[in-house]
Image (cartoon, rainbow, N blue to C red):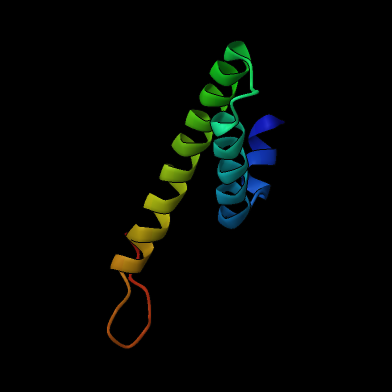
Length: 72
């Protein structure tokens, strides 16, 4: 079920979530243990985002000059 929630989140939403995590990590009031948790969460988001962006890039690279797509 957690996988389905990841798919529902847009790439833009994921970037926004990463931005929020980065701001929390930069906050000097964030406890060390919480910082480690936020870091791990951010790394998972980055891993997911990287895979999704790779998929988009592959589709873009396979676009013909006339704007149609080739299957890969």
